[in-house]
Length: 436
Figure (cartoon, rainbow, N blue to C red):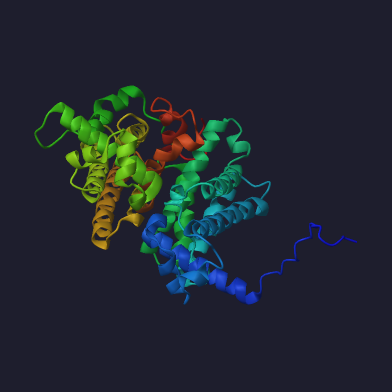
């Protein structure tokens, strides 16, 4: 028996399991938070706005999650778990099945999940556009979970058809697959909800088999050289206004720094302080060269759209078959992403733009660029260099591949402009089942 006046380490009181009411309220909170984070970005959302959507005051919301970053972390972990479950289900249903069957099932399950979210049968899930905006220590737990989910998706590609693929090949192709699944959410609403499974089926066929006509192989250097699209992409950055070379170099340095930070942190996370710090200059220097952050980031979008637009238009008007021109265009843009002039601004950064007119303007430009890709693919249907396919869906898949190339170094650390075509661009156009 403990003597008076001495301290004892008592066991903690037993924790009570959450009540049904607590669980229900928390799920409603996660649903509302996911929608709000998708609309405003992690940096732009506030606890007060989220609380109001579920009839709580901010102090009551902190009973569930103390900080906004904790709430965002819970939303990300829930979305990651949902995607991981789809990959595991596809693998579990056909453990000895083909890679094609597993990938098709995974994308079908993903489309059904999106359909349920669209109809309200399933709660909303946060998108992954702003995942890099989380601070530590929350970021560590989320990225660890995302990496585990990535491994589950990569396991879908392990089979006899891919027996000769190395680790870098598998990682690059898993990134293509997962990025295409994430991208589907951005454009599938153009179709009726009942058509989502059909869209996913066509998406799977294109991802697995590519767009080349039967018997086609990757064009050799001699066939691609007349297009010179790497030069076209770089030329798109030539200044339209007079000024010294140093002025233009400084302006482009600010654009690249802002692009990288928006890709990592979203619009609101790319502050003037952070952009200046990345370039090791003062805020005074920032405002000497830029009027304000909003105009700088608008110029980042214009810069990226100029590179992609010039490259695609040059490909559309260039020599050779449409297959050769499509290969050259996508390869040039992927190399640009990984080269000294890259990256391009992630198109998912539109979710964090502060005003709807700005988002609408960017969305229109994205649709125009998708139209350029689709037009090039239609040329291939006409000249017979591409197999029969749905050019609207194929254009979205190629847009996804170009966009996702900015994140390739996370999954394939040795990726570079020199080897990106072999590891990444070829399977994007020839299919996930194409040989290494």
